[in-house]
Length: 195
Image (cartoon, rainbow, N blue to C red; front, side):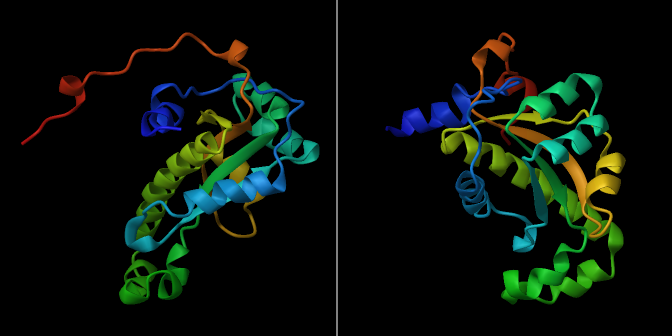
């Protein structure tokens, strides 16, 4: 496989899938492999605030589906795996072990709830991207969804730990029949400048 092939898999030919083949389940080993890749992506002060609930069981998916918009409910119920990507606003408790050279940052975040919450949110959003890329590079497909009630997900799944849901990502072997025609992307001059 060439570097060009890898770029196609990760970006140029990758799609956001709406449907997945239900006869191709995702194993524990595949779930661990996804995490073992995504964990290497950079985050602010190596805080790694992303938290992941891998929802695979039928009962758990039935609990998750009603929190989503109507169009996303069937996707959750049909996908072999849905990942709730969340953030831990108390991620800083682990900074002394995850960033020993920056261990003093723990107190900065502990004393500034807004800074901790914002840092957790933005870095976990990066980690959601790493999750999607990891799945693609491991031969799987992903379908991220933002159409859900985060408060309902938090109440149903994270009431005991304070994690905050940000994104749902269906993962599996995508069925291209469920894809829409590919939409255009904005050109460089529309969205970027070089100074």
